[in-house]
Length: 444
Ligand code: HEM
Image 1 (cartoon, rainbow, N blue to C red):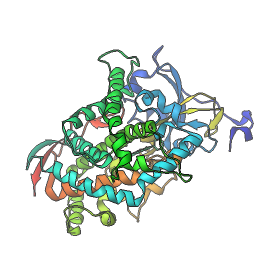
Image 2: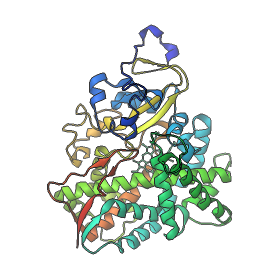
Image 3: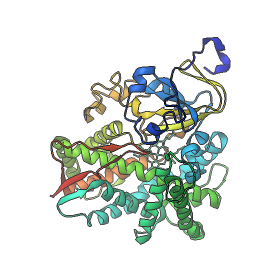
Image 4: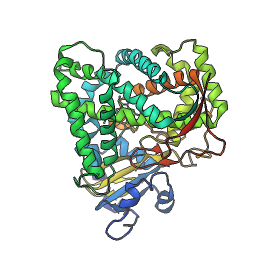
């Protein structure tokens, strides 16, 4: 029901508090200390307000509130102005930063780059790149998994997105991405040399300088990479992306694909090392396929790996929160929300409430199995890829990349961590292990 259909009298005032004088909750927000934490939900319930970064924020927590924000039935929760606050200067005009008719048009064109036929085409170079990357891993012994897999997913992206093999330049591009993503939650949002925000701006220029000179060749060629696909994609009425659109979308896609897949593979490796029974089960299924690399039409046979992937994304939510801003007065779960309010939809909380997920901190992939389906306990109980019109367009690409890479890793190695080890997660911007996830590898 939209606000116009409800009398103001029926809407309640949002509970909350400003936090510390002047800075409010800025530090907790910027350092990710409010992310893996349900205290605000326990104190105020699903909708509460606070101050951070000099603004009033409404925090939506749990499946009802986050579901309402993401479904956006009243067309009041805009993604562009919400996300722009964090990542606008670095990822401007990426798909997630567009709204309304413009977003719809761009999404329709971009969809062409994500058809099953296109996905199947990306898988061969993807498998090849993973195999080449793994050949450089130690045959056994200690490996800091996070930086190693981050390099691997970057190599996959440069190959499948741009059609080029990993080279020295890839390191520079990797650094530029990291700077852009980490700038998103900078507490000091000014271009001061050496500080996070400025590094993000420099990172953006590096990425543009890397992509723009390649446009002409991509438009003229018949490459099967994502860059070429965006150059050639056409909407229903034949509309195409301009050169600027292609560069903007590429920069956003590289970012969107890279860190999310990296953290998902990292948390899967962690849980598989912690739970050898699941590791064995996944490996048996991989071996049963009888191929070193998984073909597109056999991805669905990796059933246990799919359960583990879902459980890893539930626990270490790759995108733990999404941003919106209200374009008009509206309501959220019966609370009045004025126009121009910043909204943070806290997806972490959606996956960690025991009302929907019994024993929520326990690693238990079986909760996604057909006989349990805890993800169906609420319509919006499980949203690692979001929901509504901005739902991840790379969901199948991401799942394919993650399973294809883990399929090769598990056939090659047994992964191990000491029994007492717990992965320390840094929730600043997107999650990552503070210690790089030191694993012991045993070559099979
Ligand atoms: C495990 C992997 C991934 C996760 C968990 C993930 C998560 C998400 C989430 C939560 C959103 C919604 C954000 C919002 O509503 O504000 C999103 C949007 C998006 N993702 Fe992903 N993503 C993943 C992989 C990828 C990949 C591989 C690509 C591209 C190849 C991609 C491209 C995008 C794009 C373009 C959007 C914006 C869609 C739109 O606004 O219409 N993502 N992703």
